[in-house]
Image (cartoon, rainbow, N blue to C red; front, side, top):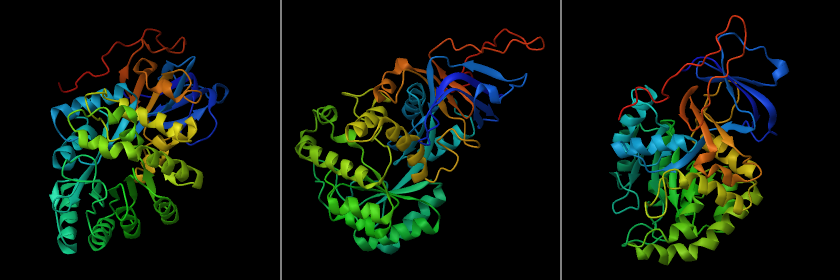
Length: 408
């Protein structure tokens, strides 16, 4: 059901950074936020469906900014389970062709019950850290970017340094040269596509900053020069701190070479984020989602990242804003994120107060209801439809399965 709705009696965090609204009313119409008001400012129309959020927090759905989700059946399951964890938008840095098809199916509501997918395509050098469309030299790079845009990419992903994953690589290995990065960024921007770059170390960090990429991801060995360079260039920094957390370092027993670099990176990574926060760098939220099955359940990584950011100095409110406001801004998603009029109605109802303890979002039992594009997609409560009692309005609630029509 996507008819008009009113969520009443909850404590509303709108995601802009403004103070919460106690006993706020969130009005939803045609799948979008119509208004947030107080009870004495609104007279609910007769046809509105009212959801009672008494004693709970109402806030925007979370946005995961660095995921690896393609177009497989397993990917659909990841996106369905994401909704249950309160994640309504997933930006996949390696969606590629299959993921683009899945993105379009979700947007057309042919694939039901899935978090929204924002699809990135990889363009990388021979033997690069990330791989999909291989291109070497500025002109071949430009051709590859054009091919990915033609394919339907929402953004372009590349690498400026090595990474932890491969047994035959180290983080300090340079991937694209400055000339190739310049060509990639120039071409992507000519087609109005943002550029996301994987970069852990120098010289890759400075090369990416100089090329004018939009987002720097990871920076596990980031230095002060790079942090200040990101600030001066007004770029977004998505640190993915979860990658170098103790829990994740121990999650890859079959890949011992990863710990050899992750462990020394851990304190450097966090100090870099503390400095970035102190200086006012735009910090976005991504976690290398959904992560290893050894230690992580689907949905864990995104919310763990919020907890890591709070440990690194952000307030809970700042961490929420980083996910629901800054991350969509980094991807140029103009109608996704905060609960403001005109934005898509993506929101969750939560037991507990995430501003007092961001960890309440980690417990799936606290995510009581998820709404995406104005439709109830996941519910862990008998939320009912608490209709206002009027002579001209029925008091019985409609019965339906929120995932009715979803593909298996």
